[in-house]
View 1 (cartoon, rainbow, N blue to C red):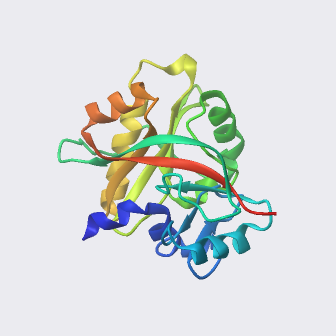
View 2: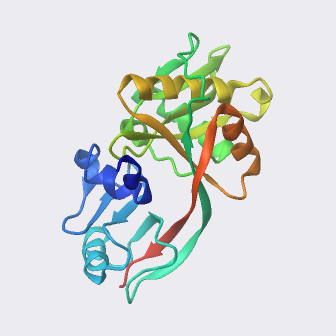
Length: 227
């Protein structure tokens, strides 16, 4: 079923539409470190998958895994993470392009990194923008809000890095960008999903109000490979 890929979205992204951005082999993959800290194993219960992941990240290397729920192989150590919620779009999402939204690219990376540093929407590296289309809204030339596309499990594209500068909040910019990114996802023949920390109740409330619904609870855990 189409929804099955959402149980392990990073794996299906790294072995599918994002294979060109992946490192690793066998039963494990990771994004290039300059793109994203996310990695994936085909099955968290497979010792061989964790051995393959150890080979990919190197001794003492780290991997951010979604959905492992604390399961890892001997020698690996969980060093951070928490519980998250996975949301998927419904027919209530009013997807529509935004005439003021601009496509962000390599020349915008310094501003994107600055906005991320001030708002902390989640992992974002200097080449994260290569994962998909990122849109931004500017105020007097300054980037004040953005949202874009991260993991691409087959048939779905994840909306991520939804953030608004503190001085521009309360104007509905995040909602406009989520609708615009969703419209771009539809144009690519896919559906939109999102992830958020369960502690980020404000963001979850916004996403539910935009027409997304909770599919499941999940985990985001940072593991360190054996030395």
